[in-house]
Length: 257
Image 1 (cartoon, one colour):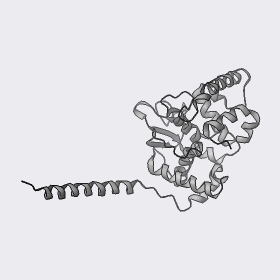
Image 2 (image 1 turned 30 degrees about the horizontal axis):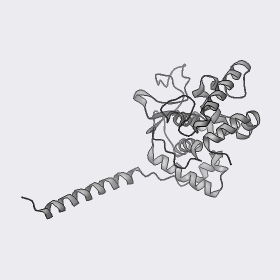
Image 3 (image 1 turned 90 degrees about the vertical axis):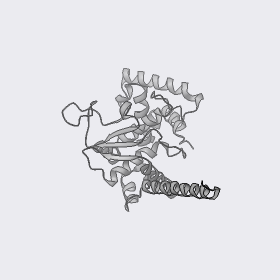
Image 4 (image 1 turned 120 degrees about the vertical axis):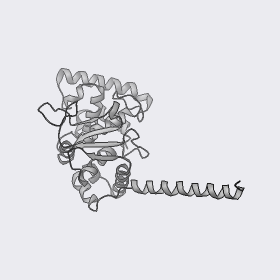
């Protein structure tokens, strides 16, 4: 028979083994940013470039945390340091003012070289998709194309950014419904106002056209993603052309003074 002392020693050994294994698993998940990460972020990410030093340090820590938590995999594409940094930046920009935010509904980002179709084919002429948030068997997975990812950050003269667009879908989806109303971060008292504002703007877009990308008129889900791109890429222009939308997006993303 085992004595109480032997049982206690055995229990302590098991605890130490568990702690040792757990520590190793944590260490393996740590991702270190490339040596020139600051230069890359400054050159390619306008949002980061416009932050003060304290803001940049917070942005860098959140980028590092994101890259430690989410796997990024190339599918017929080589994923380079700049691609990882841009994906992480697209994730952080919309929620930068929400300090405790985590994408618990994302485990992996798949990077395709170019556009694809609904069957995920990367060849052929009918390939209209530049990015998507998966469902079903692809739950907790995002797909983004390398070319569109880079263009979203290189071109600072339009209101398009595919990475931001797809991460906004994830924000929208966090409350369990992909409907253009991010109830997880939008105060309940503003949800009806936001729904009405979206419906009204979509109706105006279909009737009269708009400076807002017409893809946003597809449905409220796409409108929210498209107008969020506009908000983060060209905030001054959005405020000038659509002050009501700009003010509501400030409430949603907690960016107002």
